[in-house]
Image (cartoon, rainbow, N blue to C red; front, side, top):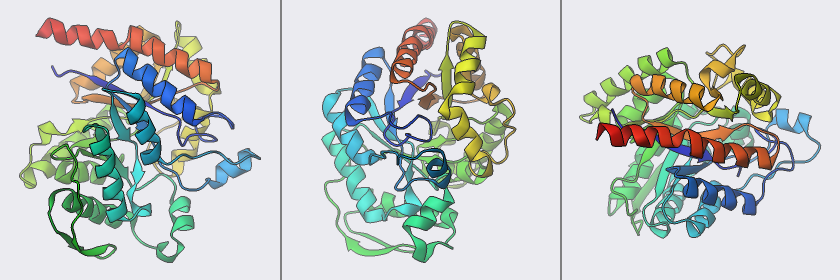
Length: 345
């Protein structure tokens, strides 16, 4: 059985969505990353928003602070030594490929080869339309397909040229290249198409809080797509993004989860990322419960092929509550999986 890895979502772009306003700061983002590294987490993750969503504007009179993921992670890189630096996710259709590849390659070099470039279409189409109104009718699935191939070409080719429906560049010599060969590109999405995209081009798949049977079904599609592309599907990390609510009793964990802004954020995704899921009891698709219950749920997912608990979003409406759960999980859950690996070895 493979080693299970763990990552924590940093609150760089989650005010008004997962947390109240105000909540975050550059100092908090760096401090939580340092805490995660000290506790043995494998990675920390930043997400990507360029403008405020309409439902957030309705709920809050004050705009949220959204910090750029690449810039945020560069500060985290300078304040840490070991922990991997992930984006969960860069909304690739909203970003020009050459500039995105340059930022990613630079961060990988400055961090000593620690970047995981997570990419996706984005949960809020309204954000894409606000930022790029001239291409508002474009199919974002087509854009990300082209974007991944374009970014990969820039990462590996001395002179990169790309000509697609949505993106085009000619004879771009982009150096330095990333330290990691290949730079890991992880593809987000809860559909079979997203899993196939990860199998075809990616080093990881980032679904969000899917039931086990959905992950198993899409994982089969991922591996078939990888095989058709002449790749090893078993080498692709399977890394769901879950919400974490950890407490000494099941009831307390559920209560914290249900009272959190993250719970409301889940409900906002029922027309996009989570449109095919039953959200009446989202606890069953997330890591909500006591340490023993959470360990059992992770083990169930590991048996079907999950390799990484990436970008765990910690529920709680206070900074101290979030920090306390990061420590609790690090002390009570992560050691179980480290011990299991040592015993098998």
